[in-house]
Figure (cartoon, rainbow over the protein chains, first blue to last red):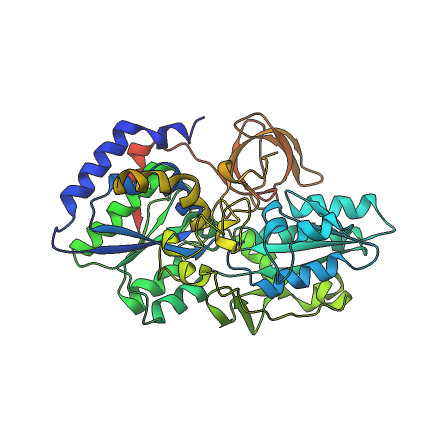
Length: 371
Length: 85
């Protein structure tokens, strides 16, 4: 397919890899965080890390929407799904994310009406088809997904869909990046920026990274050549002692983002004072709730949401993986007690989670290395 | 639509948009019927990229078109990799 195949060209990939090898200074070690789970998935799926010099290390960031949802929030969703008369709708991965005692899939097996949707619009359609039922949509994701929820809520309001509501767990990307940069346990040299978040919010919001922390960042597309080229852009900045926001994904990402998306998000959402992130704890103004104009469609206003706080299981080290402190395979339960089929932690649930991506692809390369 | 199979990823659960081709436009409702690379079709919100035309390639995430996919080649991409203005 056009715009996909040409960004997977092996010859161009080899040429880029050679350029990267020629650029790095051999005595330096480079730690580059790919913020987005989509990049983590691409890196392992296409073996991008195998093409890099051994002194260039990827650190996996917190940009996997499912992975950062805390256990308590899953419990809140399950409590809503068990409300009489409720049809609870969510994206597929959320079904398998463990709460403190069960998953939404368990609740479904026990009789709760939980349905997978591919978009919030599907959830609204279910509401219109079931006027006698309450339909709740579990909204998760970063700024890539939030406009979709916002547009659906605007449609629900215009159509007067009173039996539709949203439990809003949308998060924003800048606050966790700032938290990571402030953390003494994480040392990073540069960033591969999230291409599709930036399609919505633009490249501008990432300027604080070079300006305040002196680290380079390249907004990147999601094909293997995009990632390789972004790595090269970050390495060149490091070698030349520059720190800027560069836009490798300029074919899609405008500097100022999508103004229509920002406008609808501003209308429908407002910042929460704070929100709990898995592995990162509570971060101020890092998540969205519905604005007062949309309070009528807020499931947290309509139902008694328990607002559960649950500590992660001791065996699970998702928090350390999400902070880039350990690699997926360094977790005690990786690939044994915790697998994509029976995940303990969120990072093993989503294909964008570092643990699942590594389990599905990367471990084979590592096994070859070990042997 | 895309299955929720971990090995193939899922356009809604992840944070990534996929290219979809516009087949039919319903401008009154702000929707377009689009198909992905495997020919699977679904309704897509077009409010963020309107107006759209049949045949255009859109980047779609969670049922919403976030941007148009433009016609750059990888070799051109190096040239258009921009620094902040």
